[in-house]
Length: 260
Image 1 (tube, rainbow, N blue to C red):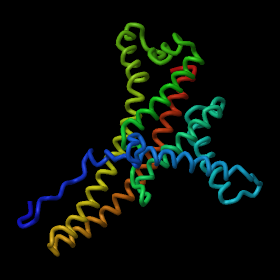
Image 2: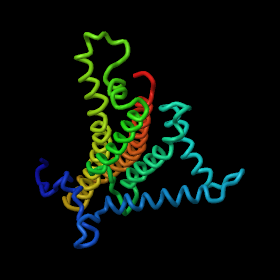
Image 3: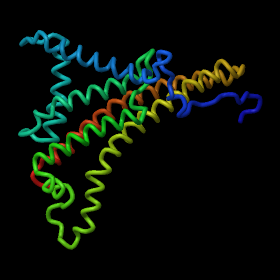
Image 4: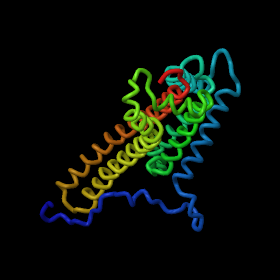
């Protein structure tokens, strides 16, 4: 505590993410719902516009759409799943990538400034969808027993080690994956946004509330650091989108592969 400085400042905490309804009486219609709905509209508009008038010499919008689609198809789906099987999963992976990306970067867009996946429920739903898909395609490929064996009995492991390996592999491949997927995405969005809030609100408090010129200078420096944090948060938002979709593709590839 600095002598003579008021102590009324309350840093942002988990309660800062409990947003009120946008419309009174409609409890479910909050900012995350609005942001996610807007992101769907933007994605549909973007790819519809990019593909509506395809040409050999692409327009800027067509070029951007092809660039985004080809990135997911070639750098994520094909590399993780394989060239023989990847195309059937590209629509899901592409939609998942851009949905998560837009909802993440919404945290740095003025007037929105809220990452949807900082609410754990949204991360759970995305992870469960991926979990259902890769387990379903694995069961279709190998059958229920074959898939269970495929995921829990690594090739080349001695029979006497199987009682130890089966529960470890089951927990790792079946149980933990959706939890780690969701928590990784949620924790990064939550922590990054709350850290940014500390710098912004802390700087505001030092500049406008303390009545101390020296501390006001510190507040300005705090704001500048907040800008750096915002840049870092944007980088993390993009990286976490990529990691989530890459891991989903890898799980699909592992589920349909011939050997574990």
